[in-house]
Image (cartoon, rainbow, N blue to C red; front, side, top):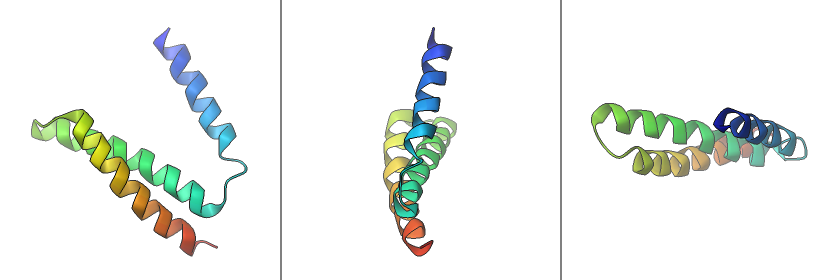
Length: 72
């Protein structure tokens, strides 16, 4: 059941990106990549995965927003 829900969310996320500006796409992509990286780094270092994901999402979103605004 969890796999089906994950697939539906992934498909909805891809469909939702078609009408976004490059800056918005960069923000969303950066936040997703940052969350995954932050959770992974926190798990490896023995910290809280949720905290790492939150910090990574914020940092990745900011960096992605900046990169996306330059892509115009």
